[in-house]
Image 1 (cartoon, one colour):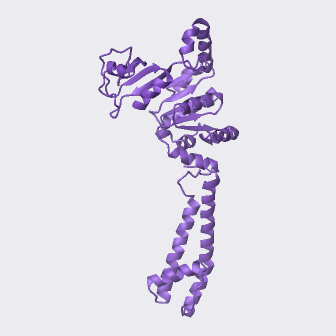
Image 2: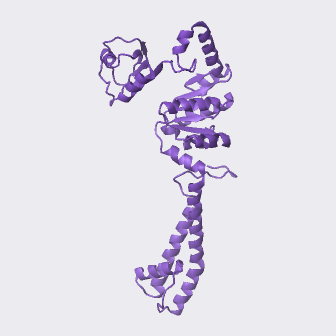
Image 3: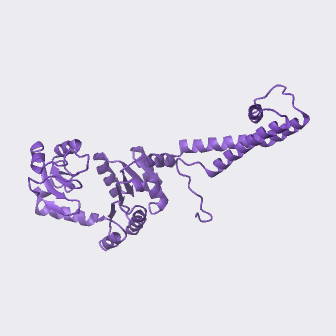
Length: 336
């Protein structure tokens, strides 16, 4: 139920209720006119319908030999019917123009067509970085932010983004959370991220939710709010700085710690019924991709095995984690 004083939001693909009611009224006028001429003039239903449409559209007609009662009925039909036609046509045109010119509706329409996409709540520095990495990997992205300037800037870059409150059910549903692959709550406020997690978890219990935590105490709270994983930029950045100070050669190979192009690329390959690697042994995969390192395997129950045995056969539901150069990882992902 919609609270009083709050207007119902019209979603893409839906007609305004006022337009629907006006169309029903127009149909009622046509039926009324057709039935009236059939009864008063004794015409066939087709001739009565044709004469009704000619009257309502003001096309004009010749002498049909109307009786006096028929003329009176026509006068009533013209006064009420032509106004109804004009009103309905105006509403339909207004609805079509709103859909064509309103950028938010266009963005929501695009979002509703996506499948297995990633929803980013927040277009700050962290959100922009997340979107950049996702787009580099070829992932589909939908962004939500309350700042119209950030949204407009994202749209100019070709990103599906719209202005909205990411803590609300409506915004997340507009973004297609029920079809999403994952949700990221990366606003600058931990309280807002917690609300996003609560809302997203209620709408999509199985969708992974990644949350940003500005303060260390918020990590546990965000997990309780429904976040699958919580990332603290300060902790991650501090760990990266320490790694560069203690083990610079290791840091040079780890993604994101130096921002260079020498870092290793990691990828996960899900073994699905359509996967070409289903039933394949690790040693066979290694022979076809000799420059890749098989890091770990997570089985269907969630157990992780690092450095799996070469004779291990990849089974349905397992996830393979590999590392290598960006070119080698891309080649494996293309083959998968």
